[in-house]
Amino acid sequence: EAQVTQNPRYLITVTGKKLTVTCSQNMNHEYMSWYRQDPGLGLRQIYYSMNVEVTDKGDVPEGYKVSRKEKRNFPLILESPSPNQTSLYFCASSLGTGGFYEQFFGPGTRLTVL
Amino acid sequence: AQTVTQSQPEMSVQEAETVTLSCTYDTSESDYYLFWYKQPPSRQMILVIRQEAYKQQNATENRFSVNFQKAAKSFSLKISDSQLGDAAMYFCAYRAAGTASKLTFGTGTRLQVTL
Image (cartoon, rainbow over all chains, first blue to last red):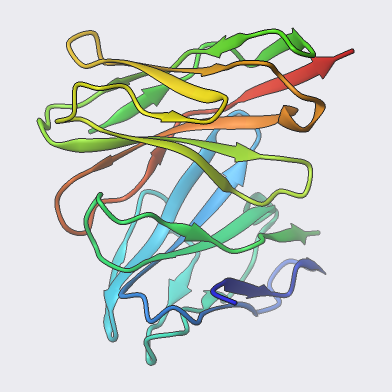
């Protein structure tokens, strides 16, 4: 089944404890992206990747890191999480990098930073 | 920068009735795509309908249709014969046609469906 998977689905952590949220797609998609969803703000892009080893900042990159060492994986790293990073996170992927290509979303990761 | 505005935080519709969700956007691009996503309580983001800006004909997917007014930069979603399963958060989104373009989302409209 073609899909985007994220792990974990739920995570409660404490301030300053490094964490990684994994994202994997099995559709051989070039473009991958991370979004965070906050009430009243919709979804905002954190980082995106156009291909292996090609990543760039989105609208809200502060406090996050990403890497794209393999085409299928695009992990999101929070090196020192803070309470303002409590949010719902989505990974998405698309076959190509232009607007023509539909983005497929993962199931979301609910992160709480205490 | 592109912006997407959804001015209705919440809407309510009776089952079997029709409801229209509003969306306006701002862009200087001439070629772009517009989307409506549905987010049910499961939180999964589901693409409902897509409109290509260079196509004048409004997109339709079963009970879902759009009213795309390019000059007014308006992109509303009409849901006909509303069903209980339509209850969800609906997001309007914009994506330019060029490479490396991101999805820009509105703040969402929560739709309730009542009996």
